[in-house]
Image (cartoon, rainbow, N blue to C red):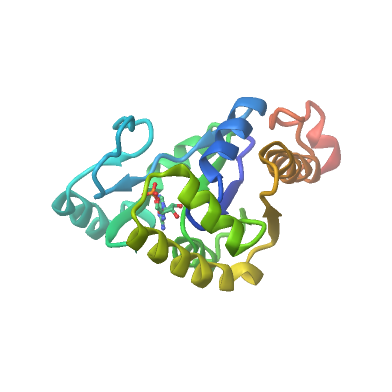
Length: 205
Ligand code: 5GP
């Protein structure tokens, strides 16, 4: 059976990651999104089991103790974790799994020696542009924007730990580049454009 790959996408907040992810999920067959667990409160419009599994701290800690998380991290004071079983099930079904996690989480998976993972960093064109976007969305107060910019500066220092870097100048182009990374990997794995195995893979082994 064909086993899908892990595509780890990290980006400072406000870079447009969710919009790009939605587009990629919509455009490509054979990809699944890993829904993380978090202790943060749902934002307006977010749904439990769709955007995140929203859980309280005690549940999170007991899952962590049981080893249920492939990686977990404290991001801006809230806990986030990737379900090991969720990812394994999706990959076993032959799907490529996209993880939207922060640079700490990406580092944990990298250090665990997970060889089936590709690391992609999505960056804003500049910190000035990121600030303009964060202010433009009108979601955060001044203090939050300053914290986010400080975090962005720190996260961008990890850029060289990623195999692929995509600059989000234009959403469509950035999404196309991310799709190109996934498709190139499928080609490399002797898989079909949809991610499924070629009918004659045994010829190549
Ligand atoms: P937000 O709360 O704005 O949705 O996400 C905040 C940050 O947490 C983002 O950088 C996002 O990539 C990261 N994040 C979301 N889920 C996970 C996870 O399961 N693990 C880690 N390490 N980071 C996560």
